[in-house]
Image 1 (cartoon, rainbow, N blue to C red):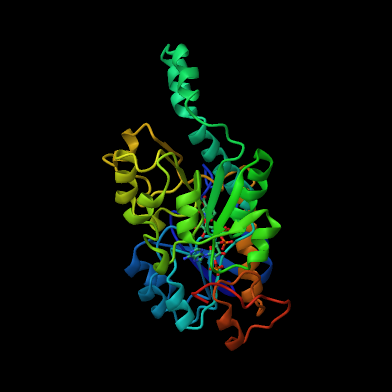
Image 2: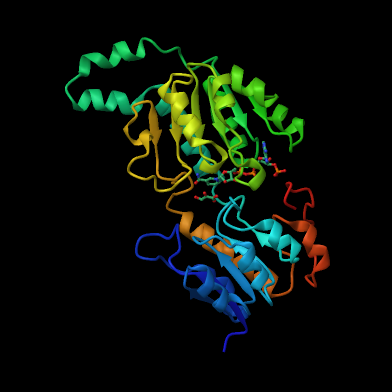
Length: 347
Ligand SMILES: NC(=O)C1=CN([C@@H]2O[C@H](COP(=O)(O)OP(=O)(O)OC[C@H]3O[C@@H](n4cnc5c(N)ncnc54)[C@H](OP(=O)(O)O)[C@@H]3O)[C@@H](O)[C@H]2O)C=CC1
Ligand SMILES: O=C(O)C(=O)CO
């Protein structure tokens, strides 16, 4: 009989083809913790998770109803940066720490954001189609209409870890950069050659708007019609954050009516999109399938980090990355390292 039960919804998202090796186990086996898969529907999950020592959240939303039913849970662990699949407020109210993996694949996501920006700007998909369909001669005239990249303005919405890594990549291209993020110190922006700005300034002055806001209830549909109307007609909108931060209907209207030029998106409101999502047929949209974090090291890095966070808490210690750290002081867990209490609105 295992000492600790970690319950997780069956049918994980993210997993490599064929399942992959359970790197979490390298941290969990030595402490006698077992990962148990439970059906990914709320009622059956609650029945299996009620007495669990920990929840490993993936795929299924961990709602208030699930959280309120937990009798013995010491931590809810996420194998992602985004914490939108867990009701963090409900966990905080129950005094349960929630952990994520914020520093695991920043570089991959930043590479992807930069790729989307460049592909949208240099019209990669359109150029590729022209060559394949025998319209070679149309390629050059299409690009003769666009400005050169150097000197264009890149505006960030949110200036967290990923946006900062994008800024490092964008600086050598000679882009002017500005950012809206009321939650971080302006010095961090200046350190990256980025000018602090209001949301309106970012929207109205940027040639590229790169969206990195986390999907929290208060950030839901942060960008609406009025925001797309403020953007330049030539603007390219890049989103590698979360689809829910954008009113997708408004974005589609903006693209169809020419308020902005192009959207390059790794994330959508509904993933995968339904077959009648108009963006699937639009030439001024570049899409990838929420894959920005993926690389050959993704599965191992994510699982090892999840195993580490779980094993710390199950052995009675503070986790390394807690999104609601205010709860830690009221737990029996031991503080063994400095942890920043300065986290977002949910903490
Ligand atoms: N496409 C993909 O595969 C991936 C997507 N992501 C998404 O990207 C997002 C950003 O990642 P990352 O940069 O690592 O996250 P960070 O937590 O490092 O940065 C997010 C920043 O946004 C700030 N913020 C919070 N609310 C607002 C708001 N209303 N307006 C402006 N800024 C706000 C945060 O402040 P504070 O910390 O105070 O809350 C923080 O400074 C993640 O939340 C995740 O959803 C991440 C990885 C992979
Ligand atoms: O970590 C996240 O938030 C992701 O979206 C991973 O793909």
